[in-house]
Amino acid sequence: MPSPAATHEVLNQPFALADYNLFTGDAALREGVSREGADWASADLEAFGAKLGAADYLELGALANRYPPDFDTHDRYGRRVDLVRFHPAYHELMRVAIEHGLHASPWSEPREGAHVARAARFYMQTEVEAGHGCPITMTYAATPSLRLQPELAEPWLPKIHSRVYDPRNIPVAQKNGATIGMAMTEKQGGSDVRANTTRATPIGDGQYEITGHKFFVSAPMCDAFLVLAQVEGGLTCFLAPRWRPDGTKNGIEFIRLKRKMGNASNASSETEWRGALAARVGPEGRGVATIIEMVAMTRFDCMLASSAGMRRAVAEAIDHCRQRKAFGALLIDQPIMRDVLADLAIEAEASLALTLRMARALDHRGDANEDALVRLGTALGKYWICKRTPMHAYEAMECIGGSGVMEDSPMPRLYREAPVNAIWEGSGNVQCLDVLRAIQRTPATLEAYFREVSEARGGHRALDAHVAALKEDLRDTNDFEARARDLCDRLALGLEGSVVVRNSPGVVADAFCRSRLESRGAHHYGVLPRGVDGAAIVKRAAAR
Ligand SMILES: Cc1cc2nc3c(=O)[nH]c(=O)nc-3n(C[C@H](O)[C@H](O)[C@H](O)COP(=O)(O)OP(=O)(O)OC[C@H]3O[C@@H](n4cnc5c(N)ncnc54)[C@H](O)[C@@H]3O)c2cc1C
Image (cartoon, rainbow, N blue to C red):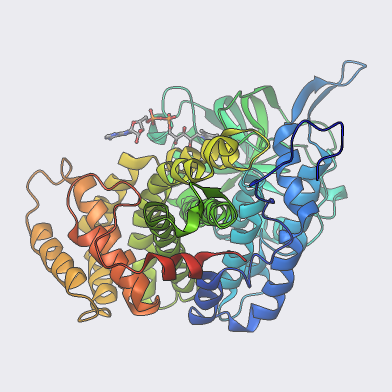
């Protein structure tokens, strides 16, 4: 009953989704982890899922974005510091991520399923907050590139692999842990890094000084950056620390923080490079080949993070609709809404299933077939999953109605975050071109692809027909580039479909194949073929 002074009783308003377990409440995640080789991690993941689903932990994600970072170039006495200040919530998210090895565990503690287990943790952590994932991903992704230069790997990797989050703005030698960023993009070209004009001058002993400008450098508090610059031998990769070994500031000056439409907790900056001391990584002229090791891993994390965004959106939408009534019935029981929710759940499950399959391939890169699958599958997955996310976020927001648009809901954050993964680390067209390059230069990648999808042969007639038509169309290489998006869409759907048909419950697999491989025209979420058991799909995807 309202108090005498109250004007109304609050009726029919849901309680926020909180105090639930992000692991046990996610059937697709639990099954995927076990299937792809990390069953051994399930107990830890369950504990991690409980921690992350607690109301006060979920709140960290909101706070880190509500109070975005701010930046000082100099201290109060005029000394250059390039200091970004973050809300304590951001630091807490970073601390938890690093203590749980999201930045390094597959490298520091390799074992069967290590990438899968790490992927599951990163996925759950990203459901809470995506922005701090940027430095975590870059740090995780830097190890393969740094290993190409053993004399750099030797001092740096122990700091990078440390489970201590040490945010102090001091030389790395004095720190208990380090994070790594990347600086490739320049004003005249981001995708086309060969157009970089930043130059590196050798000063002896494999050391160089870098002069130029980098237009996007995220996570500027990282302890070092992998950076591309031109030398006589061509575009080359370098590692540039924030501080010089003698304890003076290195010549990397952060000019300002970017004002972004989303990704608010993550600082992204513009930087001047004034003779910044750097060490070469990989041979001169092989900059792209060297940093591509890092880029491949960041692309994998884009798949993972976008899948996580979808999962959070589905969980929120279903939880809302199971509590909210309209026109006398719960939204979840109303046929159109049920199919919208089911469709959103199918998308999220398929994205996660493909991502975890790629995580398993990462765990087996010694196997030539799995390695070839990583090459094509991560390029396709990065393109497809990241591109599917913005519309997914919006549709989930609509399920919640007006309250979903409000800033105190997580939905605006999910929505604004959604395009970012699609644009950085290889925008859509660039990913498509990369897929074509892989197919043309390394036919083994396409062979690995068809070997993988053929594992599902006979599982669903729509998938069989899809794969057969795709194979036929790929024989025709005329106008290949102009057809790239069509081919990549279909390649991605075929791969997702094959993973889903083999592993998801029949009701999900059948709905995926009929709605995505057989239907024609614009696919709005909620347009599912007749006879799909939407209620069963929604039940499977409900977080509680
Ligand atoms: C929030 C955020 C943080 C970032 N952080 C970093 C960072 O830490 N370090 C870093 O180095 N960079 C960073 N970037 C930069 C990002 O990687 C680039 O923006 C991205 O690579 C695209 O480059 P560009 O902006 O120069 O666009 P362009 O390269 O000009 O591309 C514009 C469009 O053209 C398309 N295109 C390009 N080539 C072709 C082609 N041949 N055919 C058809 N279409 C094509 C692209 O797909 C894209 O859609 C960040 C970006 C964002 C948004």
